[in-house]
Image 1 (cartoon, rainbow, N blue to C red):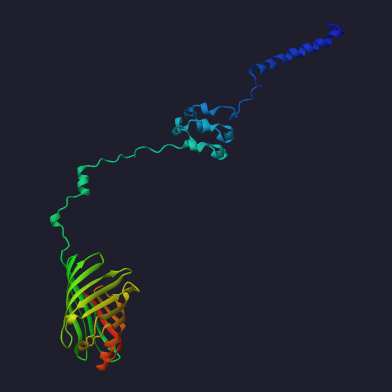
Image 2 (image 1 turned 135 degrees about the vertical axis):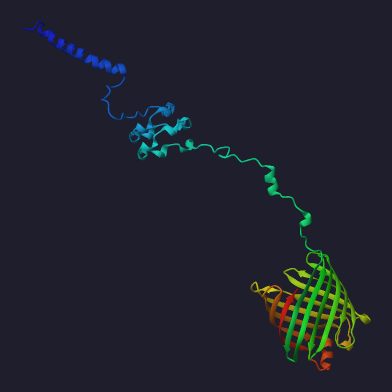
Length: 353
C-alpha cells in the first residue's frame, strides 16, 4: 500500500518529470546552442565566420577540405591577400573545381609592376660614348667634285620617209656646278649623202630654281648656203607633270627673229620600256626667201618613240615622226621641188655619258 494518499499521486508524478528534465534544459540554455554532434573527419564551415580577420599565413591549407566549403557566402573582398604567405600554402592539394570563382574579387590579387628592372642598367661610360660617336676625320672624307659634266645623245637615228631616207641627231651636254654651267647643243639632218641642216649652240646656263635654267649664248648654222650666227636667249627645265620643256629665241642678221619650242614626255610602261612623245615648233618674225623661211608658224614636228633601256646609259628605240611646213615656208619648199609634209619611220639609239 502506498505512503501517499490517492489525491496526491498525480502531483508527485508531474514533479518527478520536471526534475528529470531540468539538467538537459539548463545545459541547452546555458550554451545557447544544441548539444554538439560527435566529431567527424571534416567539420562543417560556419558561413557566419569573418575570414577577413583570420591570419591565413599560419593555417595549413593543404589539410583543409575546400571542396565542402561554400565560398559564395565568404567575404573575400575584405581579405588582405598582400599579407598572406602563399609560398607556404599547399595549393596543389586544394580542390578548386568546387569553388565559386564568379563571386571572387580577382582585382585585389593584382600586384603593382616593379619600379626598377631585375638587372640594373649599367651607367654609360666614356668608352660607350666614344664607340657611339667616333671622332670624324674631315681630311679623310671624300667630297663630291664641284665640277660635273654630262653628254646626252637624245636621238641618233636612221629614218626612212615617203621621199627618201637619211640620218638625224640631237645632242646636248654641259659642264659646271649646280648653279653655273656651260651648255653645248647640236642637231641636224643628212639625206642623200649631204647635210641638209645642222647647227651648234654654245650657251651659258644659270639655275634660277630647282627645275629651271636660263640660257644665253650664240648659235651657228652649219647647213648648206650662207651660214648665219644668232644670239640666243632661252629657258629650259622640267614643267609640272614632268614635261621636259625648252624654249629659245634667236636674233640674227638683218633683224630676223626666230623661236623654237620643244616639249617631251616620258611615259614608263615598265621600268625599262619607255614611250616618249615629242612636239617641236618653229616660228619666224618675218619672211626670208633666201633661206626658205616664211613669217609666222613655219614648221611643226611630232614624234613618238618607244625605247628599251638595257641600262640607263644605253637604250635603243623605234618610232614614227611626222613633219609639216606651213604658210610661206611650205610655198618656198614646194617651189624648190620639196614636199611640205613627210612621215618617217625611225630607228636609233639613245645614250649618255
